[in-house]
Length: 229
Image (tube, rainbow, N blue to C red; front, top):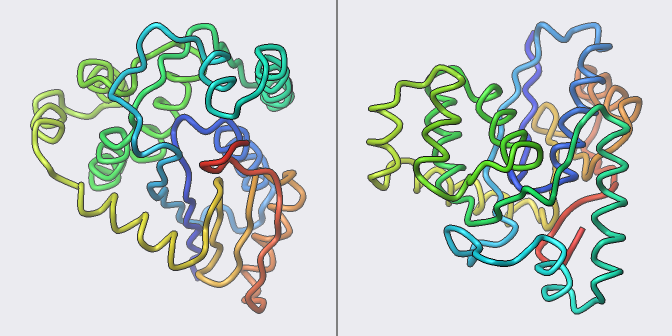
């Protein structure tokens, strides 16, 4: 018996990275972990974002987007950075190079085809939140992809084309059909929906219920959406 977990998230979503760690902690305690298949799906928090945001800090961007003061924006950053630290993650927003994530999602579909999606997802998130990688730029994406074992020539070919654009848009269409407005969002066994970066014990319970084929249900938690985190 196999259990499939489908996860909608964005690579620049802080709660998605935190949720990824919490899910991994839950999976580590799940009796049937070896029989779980995880597939990541595309969700863009800001589809209209430029390839690279120039000359603006993350705090300034948040203040402008949500019409809050600089102090309030910094408090938002501090809150999520603290939550990330609690999961063993280092967030360095002072290094972050925001930008459009459509190509990153195309690359994740390519990595799935090559059996390296989980590694690519982790490297993109760490690249953005910790290392200051330019995940909206072709060269930045290529460097991260090569690190996880994807062939450079093929990666460049993908990014120079429209390959996997249909798959990215397909993921987003499914998200709309499911009513997903914030991420991360987990669909366990095609039946149980879990919204947000839930605690590991909640996610473990969801895995156990999914394995037992419990009825459809959605459990709500902290998410990032187009209107904020």
